[in-house]
Image (cartoon, rainbow, N blue to C red):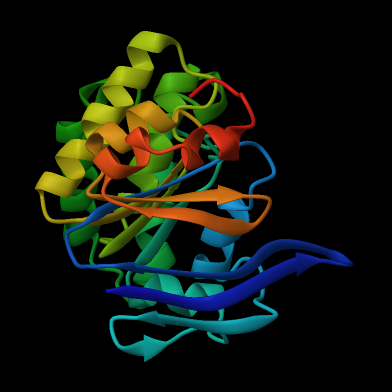
Length: 240
């Protein structure tokens, strides 16, 4: 479904990603791990179109997209949940969900369809249904993460990009978040997850990539990565 070949991403003179390649098959849950500054978020932003690539190619479902605008990639079926539970804080929970539907379906104004999609998210996250009229900014960190994920799912994506979904969450909510990600994969959604909590991310993944300073240092099934030395080297002693 997703093929990234030798992409490089930079900000001014700084290269955040260096000639990185990966491939994600339909229905797979892949995870990219590494310490802060490893280039993980930049990789996701390159896939979703939020930052340009300096070189290399990105192919989604057989179509080259590295020069495709971000909004068009959303229409193709790519949804990106950014780091930090980003939602429209001055809008209600329900307004955020409706806006999520319109990200992809610019011409779809059928209220019944949007209402059905919103109801589906309330079934997935009952707490959001209870808080549907509440401003998003007043939600807890865990609830904002649920909402950010639900907003992304409102576009009915085929590929979900998740950037540090456990960031700032209490341990109990971290476990719930990873259970949700596993459930989404079991529903058939293809997921590319970026996480600093390497042990948790690799526990649920089908395949993993380890980045260090923008370069790929290891790739393979989770069992191989957790047994090798590359993971420890990538974190330079940081907790995983």
